[in-house]
Length: 281
Image 1 (cartoon, rainbow, N blue to C red):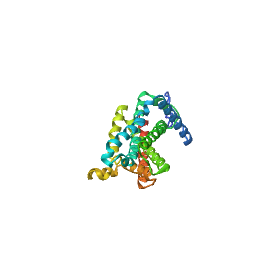
Image 2 (image 1 turned 60 degrees about the horizontal axis):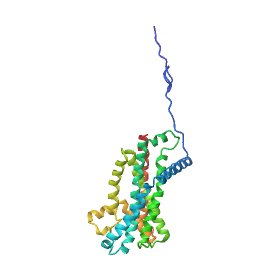
Image 3 (image 1 turned 135 degrees about the horizontal axis):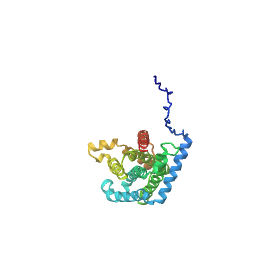
Image 4 (image 1 turned 30 degrees about the vertical axis):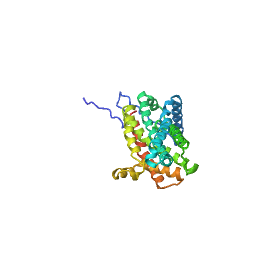
């Protein structure tokens, strides 16, 4: 007696079994991606309105740091407060916007822990949308921090010589730098296990970069080994570029280096953030 085994066509399930159904995500156009990002940005903006404590860092930090550094260190570093303000205010501006972006990764990790992004997984949206939406909303936080920094600086005697164009360009550059660096902290949010760990890791990264820069002291006053690191620190390029724009209205090489560094950070960490986000879904 000969037993014959039925031969199935390639891709065909064996007899008696049901072939698995593979769900495919529909292709999303650029216009749809933009509308999706703006929809989730509006969601994040409404969350900020309902939780005003999210503005404490961008509202209080510029006021406290500007007043503290100006009146405590102004005389020791520059001889008097008025001479120190042209160096301090652009440095505070860069520091505030760069440190404010740390909250992006912590908020992302918190939402992922609560299961918010499980709902996004079932929606026909681009993978980058849940990440880019909150970051667009965070531009509001950076703008508030920048406005308050210049406002308190002018109130205590700072007079930017770059005019309206120079100040606006400096604020725009600081916002771009904060937004680009937020992608790095977003990636940290996708790989860390809790919002607290994201905050700790972000502080370990950000505080050396900001305080070991030219934001608060001249580079020439530092030891040789430290000044070498400060000169290549990307935060120093951002601070120098903001100073050139706000104080002189000049577009210098530091502006180009700062923008190049921002583009490199986005090119590296945006794909890593999307990959880390997909692994967590």
